[in-house]
Amino acid sequence: MFLQILKYYSQQALAYPSETFFVIIRKAIGLFFRGTFWVFLVKDQNMFMSIYLPYLLISSGLSDLFAIPGRTSYSVGKVVRKSIKSGEFSNYILLPTNLLVYLYGKSTGQNIVLIIVAIIQLGVGFILIPHIEVTTLGLFVLFAIIAFILAIAFNLLEASLAFFFTEAKGIKNAIRHIYSVFSGELIPLNLLPANWQFLLLFSPFSFMNYWPVAIITNIKIQPPVNLLNTLITGMLWTLIISLSVIFLWKKGIKEYEAIGL
Picture (cartoon, rainbow, N blue to C red):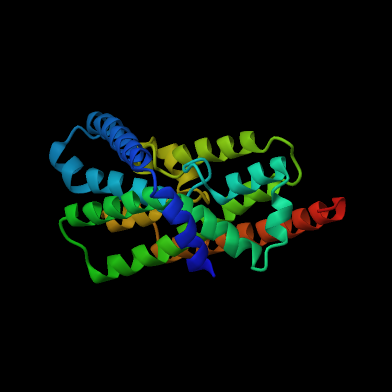
């Protein structure tokens, strides 16, 4: 069912070549200006080319691939928020399929162009990394799974809050801006002052982007951290946030149904 929904909305998204072109150009311009800013921060061209250019591409690719709230035009949170306002959400509940399967199928299909661009970014970023060890790749996969689950949780958080607040768009914007800074997407966390690094390295947002990207690009974190403890911390954040959001989502659905479809 998910694949059928994905195919249907993907075909709709790909039916407009001009919009596809616009997405690619907008992404290229954004990467160019952020990369230029990082060149001045790093001040070492060789280091930028071998570490921070791959970081830039992989970091941006992960954010787009995982559909961070506010990052894409058709996140699950936005789909739910707009459908509640329009009253269309009642139709979603009545569909003969799992609600979340439908919502994520629709969101993924509508974002298919951005997802394709994200996969290309990831591929180029990996190619630019001089050397990748098997253990490093394994750790990247583990941290990327944590990032993916957290991204789903924050999308569902935006969707859940739409049941309780008439204007959840501001919350989405807050999540987006906090994510940009705290996740290391805007600026790699290791380039920030040491006292800021300590606070941000173990926030849930850092596990959504910085940790998987820093590991695969071999960024040296100072002072050194124990990766096993870091992984456990990420798993704990994932468990706590996921359970909290699931509770909030179920409560929101019940309240919505209680009012009347």
